[in-house]
Image (cartoon, rainbow, N blue to C red; front, side, top):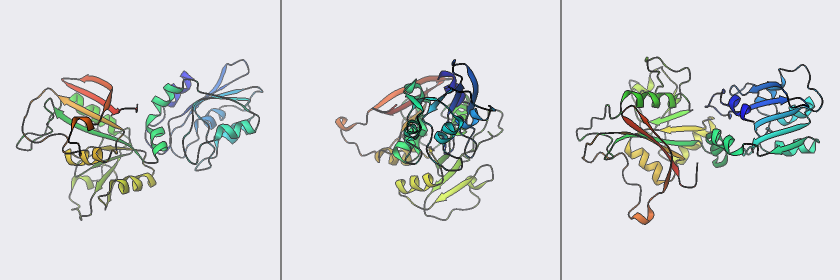
Length: 323
């Protein structure tokens, strides 16, 4: 299963489908084929592994990081492919929570295939947390991101904010942009660039929200990445429209007001903070009113990751009770 998880990580972290890895073992538990999902519309991991074999030896086992799907979409159901190939046993790490794709394990059992569930489940859930959360909540996984000083400011009194953080932190932001589906902002470049200034191969969808007609001269409408304007101010409507488009992970980096609105409506799954060793003072705080007036009502988060990026700190936190 550890090898299957390694294979899963080779697939794209963005898109409508999850990262999945699979192995085929013979009856003596020797690996005879490997596969992973390479993105929407390509064979799923199990089918990719099976395609490496002219035939499946009797008594073979499939090891998969996610419960084999039971849904016919752009590709056929993996559970049926495993049954048709003559697989005797399927071992998988974590369940598929999708409304349409789940219950592959039961299909396998009904066909007489032995099914073993829960091997390295925690590791698989950690690796697939974004897609799994999106499936469970039936909305995109929401990451809030901002940069701030030690005293929690996102800009100086004269509104200048370039650059709060150093180049190492900014490079980390660009890499993270290249690993997701969409970015919600106001009028940014919103591209994912490498340290040399070139663009990553995958560019997230740039999302502008608001009912006003926008000038085509805005930077967000350049041809460096796809852009969509959603003419609504209702965040749930925004998320619903993005979900229908196949968006499973949204990065929100639109300043204090939009971040605060998402927080106030409890529409976030993680917070990424890039904190610089600076003091600015003033009123330009990174987060404004979120509807909390007393310490007893404070939102509790859990630090998941803290690391140094050059002179700055990177902090990843999730709502308490989530990972």
